[in-house]
Image 1 (tube, helix red, strand yellow):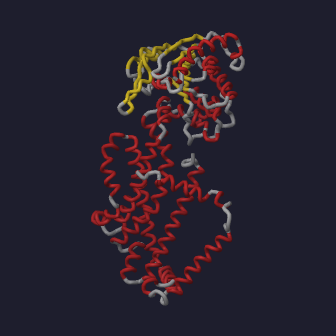
Image 2 (cartoon, chains in turn brown, blue):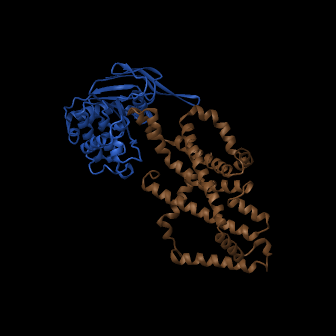
Image 3 (cartoon, chains in turn green, red):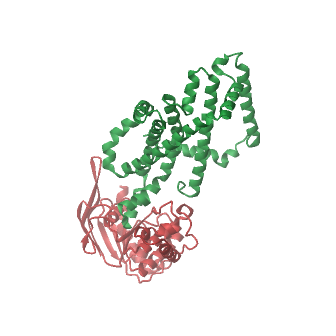
Length: 278
Length: 256
């Protein structure tokens, strides 16, 4: 199982935020931000310059066209409908997958019989590229938002499940024995020892699965939809509108960055409440 | 109180069978403090696990207050070198955990927890988390939790092995005081002979694995004991030497 990934990921992010990084020699802080902005402007300038001269504008468009396209979509409001659809499918898929994965993980984690019984099937399902389920979801749930939610949910579910399951298995047996000696019932052991103890794993799973929820939603929209950012990128591509494709990619990237930012804030809160922190 | 009759325990490790305890016999009276001493890894902890009902003996019976131990023995408090406090709960909530399990209301359990926390000398640390406490403070929190839980028997498995000598003495004093106040029966497992003689009414020397009782020595030192000075008395030295004479054999054989 590739479960500890989430934990590693968490550690890496924490490390990045730690003050040790600020003490690295070289440029940091405001000067670094200026350099970063300068690099961005340079890339845009090279892109603008290369377009139509070195590479056909048909393939790579150019920053001005992309900006014009974005401006137009923003002014007529059409982009917001697509963003709304994608965000909704991402959020719903994430929520359903997270709840389902956490419940499944705890259940199988505390029930050796069920986990042994289901393990070959779960392994097979996990190995399956979940994206291949998309046509099935379209059949079941139609062309609307539901099929995108289902795809996002399935991606999230397995990640959260694997992390939760590993977390429950990792619970210190001595803590469980201690609680049993103090007359804890089985339900109390699960609610007051196993679940809190597995929480840091669950949150690691939730954190890594946020981008996957977005991937699921966008992919679902690319396969069959009439709105959403995935639909828009697919539609623009089919129209040979490279400016449109780049414009949507930019929006998706901003959305992903926004979601990661949200996760960071939530994680910070969690640590303050000592739900995750040890 | 506790009657261990011809108890043996073996574990299966792949194909090999490891005998941890062989034909152990021991009777612990109510309010007695019994120390079991022996080389590390000799199966002493297995004995406590069996008294707690966490393991079933392979052969023999463990009788606790007249009834065979068949399931988890909820009359005992168990304290190990690892302190087993819940890391996501502060001291108050850790100490109050047994009351919470029993369904006692929040205000009531906080009140009673704060009382025992003060009693073990941890006042002012109620809102700290285990990771913010020193080793000795965590032991105090464990003792407080055991008090609140009203365990009539305390099983102590090398609880103070990781503490420095001064802290150990303070903890010995606290254990004796609490056991006396609460009329507890104590079974202490240790590899520290000084600790065993200081605390116990009776010391049993265990052989190397499989553990069985090699020598039983009554420690007739008066109570209450002054843990700081008791070890300088002549009687203490006699008991200590007699036990060490037998215990060293276990270590010498080890080296061969």
